[in-house]
Length: 234
Image (cartoon, rainbow, N blue to C red; front, side, top):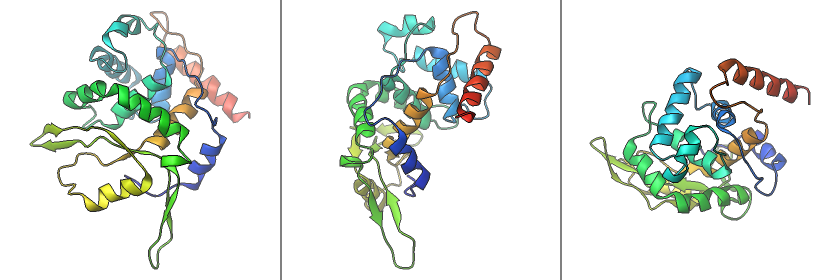
C-alpha cells in the first residue's frame, strides 16, 4: 500500500467523468489498455497476448458461457471486465497470478463488481473521502479513494485463506497495515479507486484496433501511434 498521493492524481480524478461512463472495448483494444497501464512490462506483445488468452481459458474475465465468443475476439469488454483483468494482473507473483487466487477472484466476482463501481463513484467522496496523516517534523500525507482488502494469506507457498473481500476507507486501510499481524499477508489493501481511474482514463482514449485473424501487430502499433498523436495535438 502506497499512502502518498500524487497531486496530479487528484487533478486527473477531477477531469474524469463524474458518473462511470459506458465502456465497450474489443479484445485488441483491451490489450492496448492493459499494456498502457504497464501490465505488459518487458514482455513482448505476443507473450502478453498469450497470457491474457490463458486467463480467459481459466474463466477470467468472462464466465464459461461467454468464453467461446471471447476466444473469437468478438466479445465486448465492459468496465467490470477491465477491472477484473487489472486486479488479477496486479496480483501477479513472478509474472503469473496463482491459480488458487484467480479461482477465488472469479468466485467473488459478484461482490467485486459492486466494489469496482463503488470505487469509481466514491473515489473522492463517501468511503473514498480524503484523510490527512500528520506527524511532528514531517510533511502531511494525504490519502483518498476506496481500498480493497482481499485478505489473502499464504503459508508454505499455498493459499491458506482468501476474503471475504472488503472495501475500506483510507483510515481503515491504514489500520490494516498498522494494527494487524501482516507477516502472512501476501498483499496489503489495494487502492481500488486509483486503479479504477487509470482503467477508465486509458479506456476512454483507446484507439480502434482490428481483431481477428487479419489483425497484425503492425495494425495495433499504428493505432497506438495514431492515438498518441491525437493526444499530443490536444
